[in-house]
Length: 465
Ligand code: PMP
Image (cartoon, rainbow, N blue to C red; front, side, top):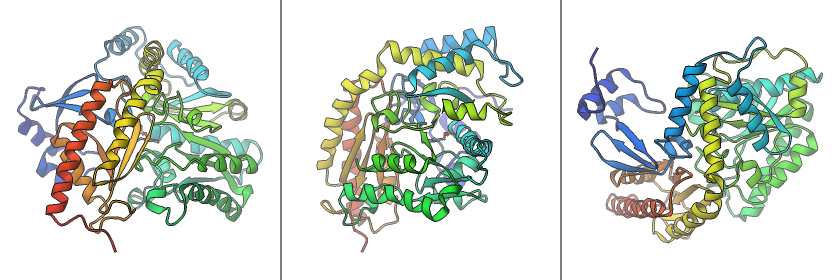
């Protein structure tokens, strides 16, 4: 075996990576030609790569490193727990202190009577649990025909067969036999791309009412639940019009179906409250959590379930669970992460300091000739790139061409922003300082300038006819 370290030359690391490592959501052959960027260290909001470049992380990893990198307290909590009890399961009428403590803490933090936690190791697993939870709930209630879960196109709920089916990513459905039966998708509340001549308010209502139409078409007696991210993340940070969620809530209440809020991104401070459901005034029966629960320091996720659903599920054996449900080391890290968040006032920092400053600078990017729309909630934002300011025209080039070029210019300027087709998105660590936000925006502006110049010289600033 070739022995390597962070001091091994980049080309050698890339070659070995290309030879043996299959990357998620990547064209392997393209990456093998280009070579993956190798990240070697990180501290605060800054990554270091194998070339010694320091890169400002505008995505908190994958929307998860909310308290920033290099937290010694989290490493110490992991080490302590590993020495005391590195593993035990929570099957067969057994429990342990980290799982007990974390569940009690989550019950305190979660809104309403969301007092019960079923653990998983990821958002995908938690959403698979949710499919079984809601269907089992209705079976136990004597309504086994209630199986259909309604979701939305361009939603992201994970990558396993179940959660990927819940999601509405057509590229994912096209591979490997998805979706599974009894999942139904309605359209997303993306006004910029799909709003036509409607005002955002009219469009929000129209899209919400698709839920009611779908329930009526399927038959209200067959619908188990509606699942949605309070704010779509991987779909492009789509912040719905203000009319959307109140109407969804009305419909959910009217038909008595279960509401699952997928808080994998919006949970734990991202929107300026502990949960996105609080920011958007949503009353879910189940919340999916992961990512920010441990700030990405350990793989842990879960379903936070209301008392009534938990009581019904608890009335019979629930034949479901994972070896790592409530893993003690992951739970100890999550607890320490939540302690840091509370003691440092991370949610308040987002609300009172980081968001207001970012909002001022982010929305000013709306003056850039390449930017059509700026959206921001808490510390998650998006920019719609446009070939023609003042309209909501699409680019004539394949969707994602302008976004990809801009993303590459971000990398070249040592700032991480992602693109979803032709939307640029950010989701920085929640602890980002105002000085770092300034650097983020300055570099983003440079990247936009360079992308604009390149699109112009390549003749790509044309709108679709
Ligand atoms: N739900 C949402 C809203 C997500 O954004 C993600 C991941 N980006 C998931 C679920 C899946 O989580 P994981 O990748 O941990 O399985």
